[in-house]
Length: 146
Image (cartoon, rainbow, N blue to C red; front, side, top):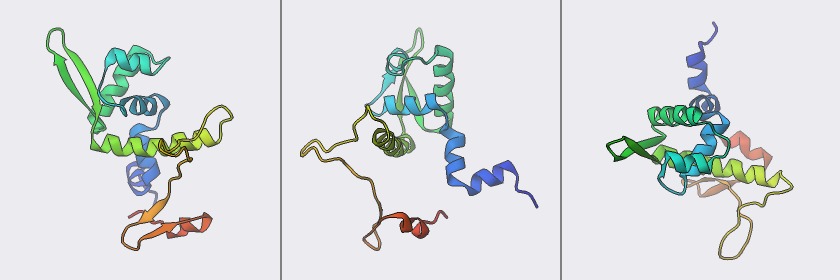
């Protein structure tokens, strides 16, 4: 029996994530919000090239998904500021991994570095119960999504 699209998305964590936030503008907006709340105009400046209608559409969807929250800072005319929710901050952490990957594979970008010593940072999968860090290509066999 064939799975429905909803069942397939529910069983594949990557597909589920991409369904919620899988376009360029959405990821750039999340990146722009990592530094704190921003207003519509500030987001327009932070994400060059985004059209106002696309920005409004993505902000509405992110709000509906619970990735961001919008708050009124002025009632008349209504004006909103946007900020990441806890799930949004979690997503921003994953986005930093994607950014680091992009930096490693771009001749013009530098990888993230530790402010104190300047060493390039590395991300690793770590199990707090076993106190074990998974290393190398073989570590994928030890990962499981429930």
